[in-house]
Length: 248
Image (cartoon, rainbow, N blue to C red; front, side, top):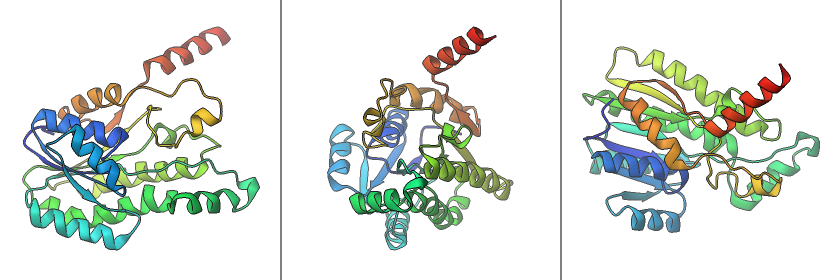
């Protein structure tokens, strides 16, 4: 996949991994649209990267997804890359019944299953026919290392990201023979505000690699047409190797 000369739409693109991807594609010579649910975050993203096009959209709501689709395809007819990056992460303990789920929804009005998976499915269904008309196009789904090594304290998040992995595989099969390439971007732990401070609250002292450390190898992998892109955290890999060596 080429990384220059594209028109790219990134959901959840105003912060974290999404913003880092936006910056990388802009620097590579692509035109980038980012959407997010928070106006202030979009303004800050535009301030950091003036070339960005910004659009407020809550992917939790199908009506806003449809409005986004209509706006993008009317104003950027040659859009050829969709990056499904929007996601939220919650600590859920089922021993508490529905308490944690209700508390998180009350705090920000969002639901992990809706944001992390259902919105991805709906947006992909909206945009795929348009992408199939382009000469060179791609869908990039951001999953997680927790798709393969889940954490019990993040059960719903881990499950939704496993679902993103599966839908990426099946979508790649469906679109074989079309102009649309399907990539899955599999981050390790990355230092972002995805968990809204929960890592710090539970006493973690290491928060993962930077977004720049994550995006640099990812962009190289796009160019090489690596469809499942696993970016390794060298610090954690070294720690795991040391533990295995100690136990052998």
